[in-house]
Length: 401
Image 1 (cartoon, rainbow, N blue to C red):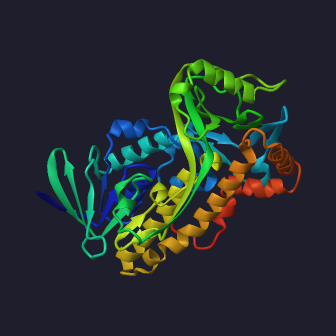
Image 2 (cartoon, rainbow, N blue to C red):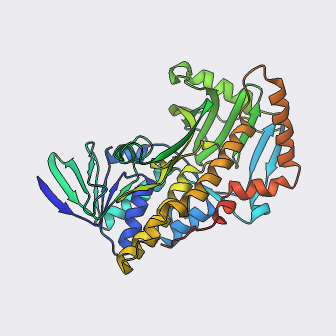
Image 3 (cartoon, one colour):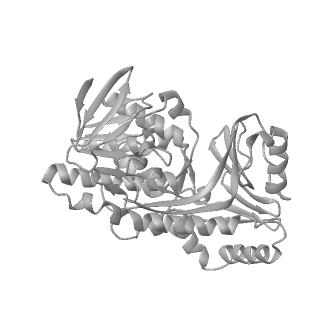
């Protein structure tokens, strides 16, 4: 068995794991990144696309935003459509902040390229990661790399491998508390080779259900439909998808959707999930390994960056000064922002998703809430949460590149 040594073993080459490795190297801290999927799969995996202004600023400070600044789509507002009317939410006017539309897979490509150019130990196709000794001062990671058994001795393990990853499952039963909510609907998401027909996102509330119109580039649109929980993609041929999108999104006086070949489709269950604490022994969880938020407010990727920002700074303090205080405070630093994002995402999910058929009272309440958001001072509070400004003001959000 080949034996290796590193300071931080990072499980998962999504945005969180890759960004953490990059930041650690800037602090002079060695790491190894292990990913169970292939590089091609990770670079093509379509996920979130909305980056808050604070996230973009941090990526710039870390030297990772060159292509983002060239190709990312800057947005200063979005549109609510309900009651056959359009209502623009000018969040930049209300908060001074913008957001960027930039596909998560594009950010992952940028991060992988940066790690490769830096000569990082970044290994793909490693499906058998096993974590050992997490409660000791000398944890190890066993796996197979290019057909060869490997044991990696390390000081710490960073679990950035998502909700279904091995990291959280390696913690003994009962050591973590989990809080979870399952929602009674799902999202059917499609990626289409179709130029966007609008310059800003459209959140549409219709009697048949919620629909979201977004984009990934000037040539590619990303669209979602509210469907029943447990719905199967096979029940949605392309023709049915476009017909339903037109029904929910089109209104008089606005450009109709531009149709095009559907490149990818998937159904995603909506859930809220939080693990507490976000660490166990020498293991630290970040991003979806520690928490899941409904995608309605597009907070998942931004929360992963926020976690890694705090964690990288804590590792810097430990290796520079031998001080564990920031590592010990990692959960306390991250969870207030996580719960705030979850609360806003939960509230926004209720605001936008149509209740089950027949619940007329709930539908009328939803109409009243929508009117209040767009026609009252509540718009500023909504906008501050949407762009991430409210979460940035929560206590104990620290770290620098």
